[in-house]
Image (cartoon, rainbow, N blue to C red):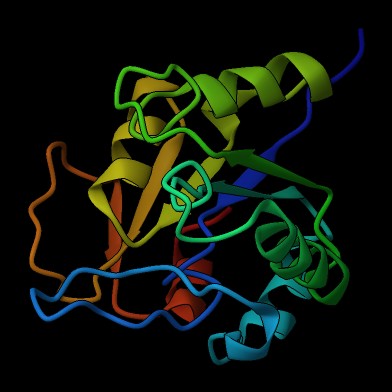
Length: 174
């Protein structure tokens, strides 16, 4: 019997990279690679997790559809992160339609990865800094780790674990 893989799905903005906040204390995305700064400890953390898990970036980038950013800019940032952090894959949704099955908080990107890469979602984790990440992970039956950045938004469902910085996820990932 072939053993299914375990994966850690990592949100991009605010989780792996620093993110500016709006005046209403909500995170927003960067428009180009020159603005990107990795969160402290992310390179070492990914290197450690890579020993036992697949690592995938999963991100909503609706600013492309809204004409506030280009697909090229988003792809440049994502490819930089893929190389720098040795990620296995990148999952991106450009839609700004809340009903789009592949747009977080919907679980479409996670179910796509399950099918394409033979991932056991129940033995996998979603790590993110927003309610959308946690809702998507919960809907896909992944374990969820919420990085609390004190944004001005509420969670819809209770994450399995809450941390203040990404390095603390090592306490919970087995």
